[in-house]
Length: 448
Ligand code: ADP
Ligand code: ADP
Ligand code: MG
Image (cartoon, rainbow, N blue to C red; front, side, top):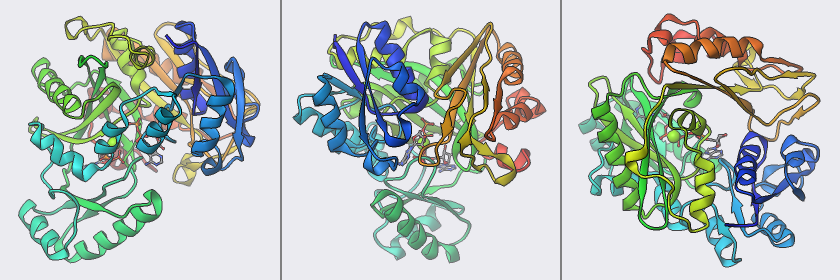
């Protein structure tokens, strides 16, 4: 096992990773930008190292500064968290050249899955169903028109290097196609530095169902069941749960088999998530793989009793997985509400400011993974996620009852948050019945 690791992230996920390290007896190094000197993740760590100015490009995304921090502090490995450098294959490779272990998949797996248009192709070859669409990226407009025609409208134009719900456009008819491709490509170029786009059939009311996998360096891959992440605002997840009301044991087995095949096809190690769309007829299609720990991993931990982050650190250190597929059992139900600093009255725009009151809920079945505290200043430089409120119950009903209570207990003042949105959602009769899809929030919740 390592004696010291560096966490190249901030906020709740940095603390989550340090908690896992602490349980394993591993010392932690936090890194921080000028804006984060007093942030909770800095206080939690055994030691902390400055990596530059507030702008992420100059600090949390600045590879030389992060490598330098690891070398200076004598850390043996780097955990990237999610966002920032977590899906940067170049960073994973650079770590290796400096003799640092990247706590994540091999650089090659990140690269192959990161080119989404190519990943589709590879998954098809591995026998995993994909949404009908182009083979690879769009290179010729006439060809794109033909393919779109044969798939049938509406279709989506998606950025091959996209992420975080961005770089996706709906096209309702052939007259809109050329412009959509041109715009999506331009946007993708400025957001992701790469303008390649591909086409996919647009499913009207799908569920977003994803399978968590974890793999070691000995070829063992275990699937930890599904999460439902259909509740999204502008293609960004808001509330997740595990398991899903839409997944039968047979479907879980089929999706898990597909996920394990997918992971094996890219020589995957560490934790990863296969994202699928589930249509109204119960068919599932591969959408993308997130080659990192996900925001919503806690839901899976609550129902499987398995610590995914600890396992990531263990397998990165060369240890075999501590569980086998037969050991995986789904026990009860878990839900997660993302508590973001966003203003519902202003189209959920980020709401920076100083947190004057911060009181977290507790009690039976409640877990709070938080990166905030009283007096904490919410910066406009970074993601607006403040905390994840996670509940567990023996049944979905009980997980929801606890979530309503916990949302009620949560006190945040000084910035606007998504607390009320969640309260509204938890009272919605269709949500309570589990009748949801990826456009549910936009259709049913005012202002979302
Ligand atoms: P998850 O499935 O873990 O919820 P998300 O797509 O919501 O994944 O991304 C997790 C975090 O990483 C979010 O905070 C999001 O803003 C950030 N993120 C993901 N992809 C990108 C990207 N390509 N560029 C910038 N941020 C990203
Ligand atoms: P990202 O990398 O930004 O997370 P994804 O490919 O995972 O991109 O898509 C993000 C979200 O967009 C999905 O969770 C889903 O809600 C929606 N989406 C993506 N592809 C389709 C599709 N073919 N049909 C309908 N919705 C889709
Ligand atoms: Mg996705």
